[in-house]
Length: 427
Image (cartoon, rainbow, N blue to C red; front, side, top):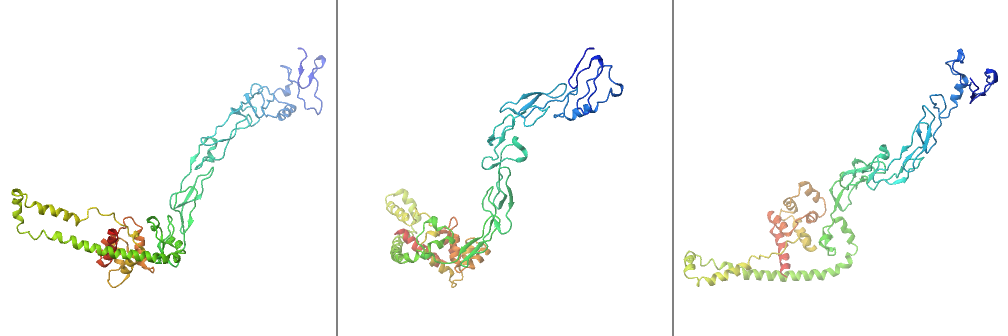
């Protein structure tokens, strides 16, 4: 056998003698020839070979014992370490990546951002895709699912519940029922429970206590509405708590309102007289036909035999009858449309204790419970509080109020309501 070149010790010496490793050298012994291995070391690696394995950076070896190369970042193992050394290939831009050095791992495919999530940093050969941390408004991205998840809609807390943890980029809303002393009147994914109003003012009465779904409701008990400027229907139905905003300009306009009241009162008186005269003129006509009632049975055959004689009286009665029941009735008037002084007159009549049927009977007739009636009675003007609350309801017309007053036998209040109202409509 000829001379061979060892990659560790160099060529053999002439004469077939094996060179000895120098003391202190890390070079391994030459690979033994078949049949020439020493008997004592045929199946055991030498200490120099173990030292060479410990110095392998990849920590992986081929089947022949050679140290495998590492593929750096941006490269993947096309042929992993095994029967032969590692073969590396570059990762594709925006396609694959490798963020580690390995002798066995190939290039990994780039991740894709979920729906509604923009891309913060594109994929490179050495780094995976980086997605933006925020979803669209009203959505969140679950952090535990990684980049393969989708943005989910945030939970909305219903009325009576507040957001303990508002909806964030990676967290859903955490709702909790409002505890005692707090409320929430809206549906929201971020609004917390708000503290309740502790108590009403001295000139207010508590109508409804605070609950998880609504705040404390208070109503004023003062009676300054005759001094208010004229309000429209939409403004007249507002809460009495807001009426204090109109108090500053009242003293300046009070002198201008007096002539208006006087003219309205004069028009009401004239209209009332005209209405009475009209009633006296119209009412006698319907009473005339009952006088010839005895010959009434004999009129039916005469109608067929002599149509000319009964024709004149029959032609006169329909116009007279058409005048008495006014078919085109005006639309029902709301109670809140009455002048303020007229409302005050009605309230004074209901608060007077001479009739025995006061505002409490009217409240029961209008459908209020005993608890609400007791609440109205705590204020200084219970009749005003009752009618103000009732006027804000749907169907609070003069007809409904007159029917309730007639049911409690208060014709004096009905006359006070209907007389001026009908006279003003005639004028």
